[in-house]
Length: 200
Image (tube, rainbow, N blue to C red; front, side):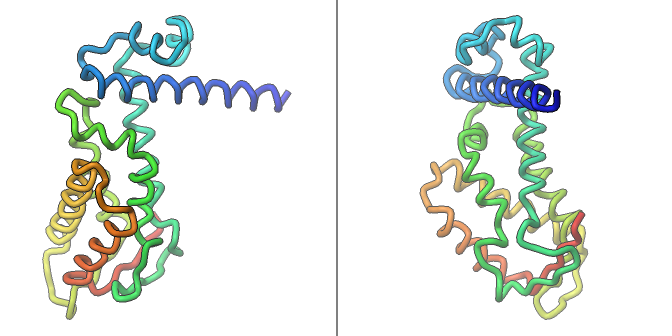
């Protein structure tokens, strides 16, 4: 019985994944607002009744796609750390930026920020998720322990990091993942002495 449930669950997830991929491709081809449910099912090679088993409409699918990707982004952070671990920026390396690996691995989705008629909410949810990560997952120590408004500092740093990511994506991931992370690390060392992963 459990095997049947497991198989059914995997099939449902696979179908939803195919519908999400179809939506991504169609946004790139013709823009979000021009897409119909018929377009999505044709692209994914399903029928309309299958679509409606999983989603109420195109908006429902779009929201699920955005939510799942932002949840993945949130969960990608902190994998190399233990809760409470303090890390000095002079010692950080590629594993500290698992978020970049996640974006690179899912570049097909994140490329949607380059399009004008794109996934609703993406241009706000993406930077806001990064800000939330900085606000809730890390405690920062400035160079020479210079006292600053930490809320401003986190906003400044998070949106700066988002700007670099946006530029990397817009330029077609021209630098390799490793090259991009190295650049970010060098910039990080200029204003952050250490950070502590809170484990949230």
